[in-house]
Image 1: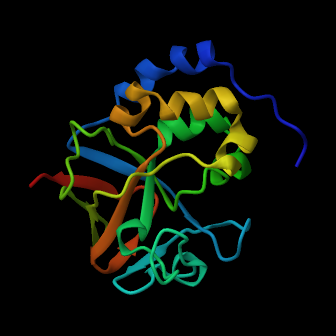
Image 2 (image 1 turned 60 degrees about the vertical axis):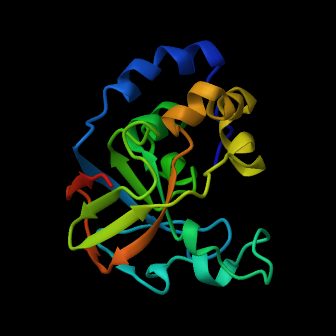
Length: 188
């Protein structure tokens, strides 16, 4: 992929009002992305969320985690969601770039801590996911792909409160999800 300029902090800040205006109670699933192997991405017309493996075809389970005592996958980080407006802000409109944010589900929904406390459930298509307490932080790959300003932006107190980097969930009701499906919030 050709080199892409990263947005500066002022341009990221300029786009924040659009992100903040995301729906709070009923949003839309914009994109379903499986990560079948490290660095690989598959955009899915239909995704199946499973209690054991998360998004079928994604490598979450096989990849494991350095944060669990036995190296197994962290069940609180089974399926990650990112605000689709923020993904477009940092990555642009090109689909290939947007998939690189690393989250499986891109949703047009307010993911902020205030809007989605831990335990909130999101009904998407036939499935339901639950917001877990696990933080979703940016990593070196995110900084490499979208720039240090973007990384600082998501790690700032405001970025963490808005959950700009996304939110971690676990599947509580398996089912099929498709772009265009409603994302309906139920809070604890």
